[in-house]
Length: 84
Image (cartoon, rainbow, N blue to C red; front, side, top):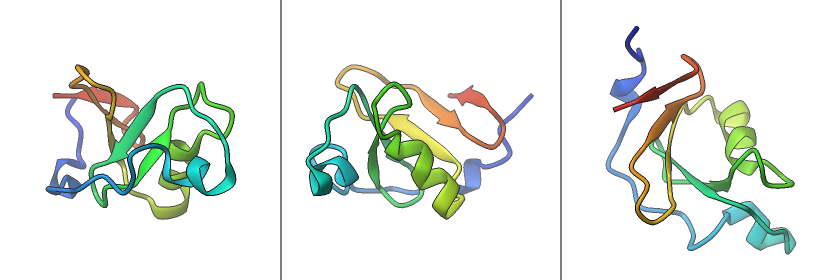
């Protein structure tokens, strides 16, 4: 199976140095994810606020990448799969 949303990956700049939404509300995060459509940086599903997934539900932007140093994976929320 192949991800059908690869055409929505863009050359993006991270929107913040941490979870953009947690920084606004004084929240904290466990790991960071960056939207590959717009650059929004959000926190992972293990974080209290799960901002990366909320961003997907609000915008429909399907693919995130880990924003953690040394991690190179990407995830498609629509196809529910890791992609290369």
